[in-house]
Length: 353
Image (cartoon, rainbow, N blue to C red; front, side, top):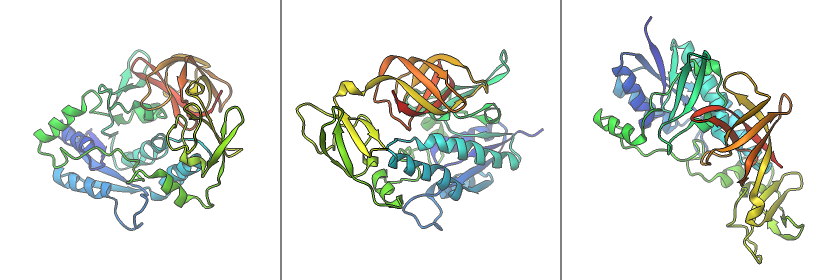
């Protein structure tokens, strides 16, 4: 049987090198690209990611398929992003895109087109454990590029059809290998923006997307003292110090956003530390839900893992308690559990206790 793989092409150096490597290894390769909704563009304009991916596929001499996901992406990712911010939470859109778009819609389309696996340029690793007969997700070897945090929503079926060829190498090596192959994108800068926000101005974007004008409300000290007014909860994040527009006898930070009362709660730095949270939308990659899990948890992409215990409360809710208090635990972000390099699962932070 011929080894046919679909490479999720973005027009960047990671996916382009991945496609080139697999061709050299004898695979039959085709490119597949999501056409996503992008702000501040004409709906009929073809996004740069699509045109760049097509150029690279032409350069490599492989077929290129485009999956139009504009509507489902808007409904499942963009709308979620806007509503979460408006409610006083700080979402991670990549987590929900991976769950609903990249490793659902795109993977299924790749399989329909005849691929046995979908391959991406993610810096993570999929391994098969012969002892447990389970697929495992592990961190990428380059800690500065590891993307395992945003992949905790995967499952055994999805993992069985994924390949991450770059997960065991440094990004510097990727650049070198791309230059050695004379790939046109070898020195193309990495994208650091949210894909549907090319200018990264999420506050302005949310204002445009809201159907009603942003509601102003009080900025309140945790002791109950009203200190000022805010112009929309989405303009604030947990841990924020600058831009509050208030003077006080000691530095103040945003310690909580109260969506029900439409209030920004501020306090001293020590008030940002807590060790317990309630999570929703939890997932465990093994397919088995542990009633109690001892692991190392990360409360955001750039955080260091710290020992914690997760306990399932019901079919929708999970409690997570850290051994040591964590700074600025943020509703809307995810807590992800690790055993060494292995990703065990995670969930979306709902409330901080």
